[in-house]
Each structure stands twice: as structure tokens, then as C-alpha cells.
Length: 325
Image (cartoon, rainbow, N blue to C red; front, side, top):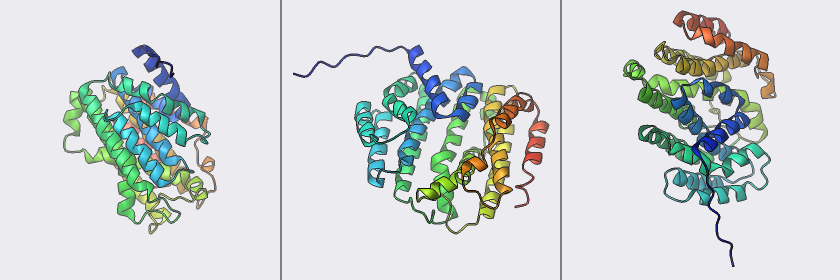
């Protein structure tokens, strides 16, 4: 006879404590940037990051077939949209990941019910925005699971589409969340929504270029097969210019929102600049920013976000190796 299922009693404060703790374990960068946001935005953005990280973990599992990844992604999306019990996803995913070595990411997957409980405490408008983002990302990544190969993506259009479904859509999400919480930003961004997509894509292009040696080692490339490294750097530089214009639309009184975006932006600028000074590199650690550099820039952002001129000056000086493209 099966033992009756125990009812697990949790509290919102315990759930949110878990969210903050696991965020620090799965991403040092976002554990640094997300707490800069106002508390109501911090909760929903942190929650969305964890949901996106689960999708990302499925994509990065090198020993899973494209079909298995697509099946797990569909189960995950159904759980987020409340079309099927979250336990179906957790059990299937942990079974497929039995040889997976990253314990923090396994713990996150096991706590998917916790992450979704937090989502359901957010406003209905924020929940709707998160569901849209997760749907586009999950379905988009499922499409690209079948396109993983060593040659790379077909062309620039496919590359931009990939960067949209994995990051551009996050820029759109941030814009919606920021607009829900800041009428002044909502007014400023009207008619400039494309800048939000560029902001997300710029960060993703940086990651693709930085991680390309590791991707190559596992037989994958997310770069377009017919586009040179120089052209990719030029495109990324243009996206960064749009990203700065996006940040400048955030009202100065919204210091937390500005600083969150400017910190992620600045780290991308400095990383891409390091990549641009090298013909090639064999490991992402060669272009990784030192902790000292990151923390120094973190301190600088406290003052920089108060001045549009200072942010523009940072970009101009830090991107000199990029603006030749």
C-alpha cells in the first residue's frame, strides 16, 4: 500500500528566501544586478530569471537529444501556464538529468514548484508578461534545439531570431514590468520599444561570442555560418548603442532600474572590448572580466546613473576597440 502524500506547508517569506539564495548560486552576475531593482520589481525579475535559467539548463544539457529537450521544454511550459501539474515536469526532468553534474541547477529544477508559487504572488499584469516571455523563449529554444550543429546558424536573420527568443524577449519583458511600475518610463519608451529588443540581443551576442570556444568543443555554434567575427562585433556594437539609448529613457528618479540595466550593459561593453582586441581565444576565461573589474564598475554605476553625460562618456571610452568596426 502506498503511503499517503504529505502536504508540504510553505510560506511566501521562505519561498522568497529560497529564490534569493539560489539566484546567488546559479548566477553571480544577476545576483549582483537584480537586488538593485525596487523590491516589487526585484521579485518578479528574479523569478523570471530563474524560470529562464531552467529553460537554459535544458538547452545546455549536452547529452540530451533534441527530441528530449523539446519534450522537457513543452512539459515546463505547460507547468508555467498551469496546463499540467508541475510535478510531471520535475520528475521527468530530474530523470533525464540523472547524469547531470551541476547540483545548483538540479536543485533549481527540483524547486520549480517554489519558483512558480512566487510567480503567482505577483500582480496579474506582471504574471501575464512573464508567461508571454517564458512561452516565446521556451517555444523558440525548442525550435532551435533541432538546429544545433558545428557549422552554426544559417544566416544573420536566423542568428538575430535566435538572439530574440533567448534574450530580446527578456528586453521586452523588462520594458513591460518597468512600465507597469513607472508611468514616467512608460511615457518615455512609447515609440521606442525596439530598443528593448536590442538591449537583450546585445547581451546575448556578447555571451555567444564569449562562450564560442566552449560551444565549439561540444560541437555547437550559435554564430551565423556566413558572417565574420568582425561583422558580428560591428553588429553587437550597434546593438550596444541602442542599449544605451534604452537606458537613457529610464527616468533619473528610477535609480534602481537604471543601475540594473547599466551594470549589465557596462559588463557587456567591457567584455566585447576584450574580445575585439584578440584575433582568437581558446577559452572564455581569457576574455572574462576579473572580479576586481566587476566590483570596481559596480561602484562606479552608483554615480554614473545619475548623469547621462557620464554614462555616454563611459561607453565612448570603453568601446574604442569596437567602434573601428
